[in-house]
Image (tube, rainbow, N blue to C red; front, side):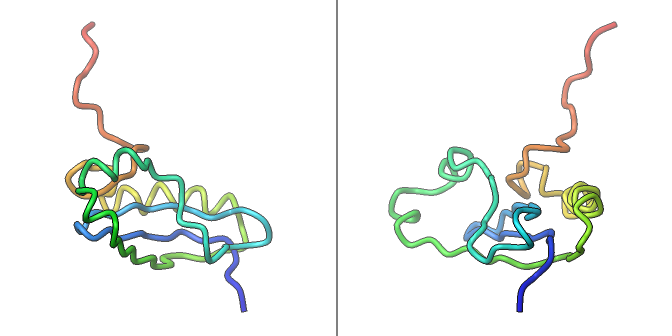
Length: 102
């Protein structure tokens, strides 16, 4: 049994989340955990905490259509607010905090 292409959610020990997609190969690879920023995550933990680190990975959506997965990824990021620094580690779909001057 295997998954088609997927949207997944990673939950870190501090409760923050990362939403990603896996559209590689012929479908989801069980050992794929995304392209989140190691530096961004590591700054939230001590070295001791990082030495015993558990992640939870949940499949949120599955499709055989890569375009649908790409569209849904953004929808899940916004719906779960994983693009907000206090909630998650997604760096895409961030709200602008400074508007350019006219």
